[in-house]
Image (cartoon, rainbow, N blue to C red; front, top):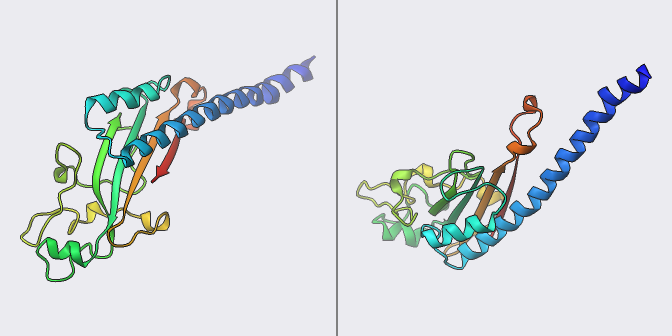
Length: 199
């Protein structure tokens, strides 16, 4: 009986609870992946997620994930990335090249949900460069900072995922959701699931 209790308490019970936690998080991961893909798809088709109508639509898609438009346990980060070539540099007043020439940069960033939960894998453009619709200003050769000349606008590591050339854009959706309801063992750290879709 002592061996049975020790075996159940030390080995089988933690294994059983761990299986339950991983199973529920896998279910949540499927939902997060679907919401992330749907958000990215709508964003790539031009839906403006700075508008309350589309933010509320996104939150309704994430039903059960305890996410609101500005807080909760989830965040969706939507970004537009492009490749900077000579044409764009010249439009900014540069003779031929600019500081971010031949780099992939953010031209738009919209965040829905709890922005303090998670940052984009590829970086975060300076918030001072964003307008009310999330567009990153271009910057110019007259001292105005933006995606043509500021390092914060560079999408770090994005070229390892997608190769873009002049005139091409990529629409990125990243989502992270915490799982505090399944975080039964706090010493393991905060649990959560994430997903990414690129169009």
